[in-house]
Image (tube, rainbow, N blue to C red; front, side):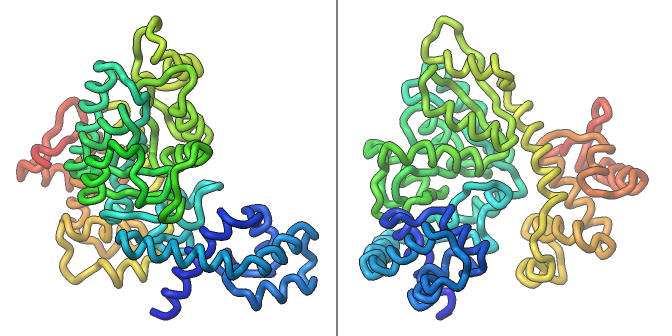
Length: 413
């Protein structure tokens, strides 16, 4: 536990120096690339910093200069970090590092994501959405009733399917997205521009309390930090990065919503836009996105298709160390719900040990999002067709699934 405490102290210190020194990502990368340190946590080791400035690592002069400045301000930065830690303790806020196994999977494959971030609430939602899917929902702070209705309706459908809704807890569309999904199986994640303890806007305290109790609130800004204007674009990149696709429910021609859509597109993710009146000024930004190639959002089905594709690639690419996973989650007796994630991992690395009942559980899990044909289930499970066909027949006979137009769906979820 001593190592864990020291690591967490280094995480707070890192947040402090990034906001209160001239240290930046470029400098840190230079230090790591030249083997002057192993990762960002070494910046909390003043003896190592002193060794670095002696000049034995062939660093850029600007890097050495910034390390010297860090040494000079080390105690002041440590005091600020200590204040962050106290605020976090007082407000039940925890910290997650990119070095932790619990760091969001969607962020691991993207550049520019935070090395450290903070959260309050039910972090299980972040873990769960890796294999159940997540959708960013953004839009105007002063939306039309049409956009509000569509947001409520589509988000609730997605949430009931177990898909997590991610938004920024602003007025308007964000607020509707959170409220409509906070009590669904998928749940909701609010990404703030300031510290997790800083309710912004203040009038959204009601949904802040609701999300903190039933969802999860996150921020890359340390506890106590106010949400300054320049932090919002950075916050939007996190919303896009945390999600499998992005829905733009309504946006004017000059809107922060467009930043989120741009980030999502640059991250290789699909952007869906709710169609609207061409004479409605508050919709012009969204219409421009459609003109530029965005997907038309007609209903939840197309979004579910997008999430399903993302989940398929994600499950094929999961790199979690299997042995650690087994120790924590796999027991002698596999129950369909409690150990479904463990079953997925075992199917990936050691499929030969799974029984027919285990495979049926995975097939049923795959069908919770949408109806699928046998070929699609073969891809998801990596089983040969004859095996999937046999299992589907047994599931049909016991009334668990039904077939219509070549696609299988659950008779109940």
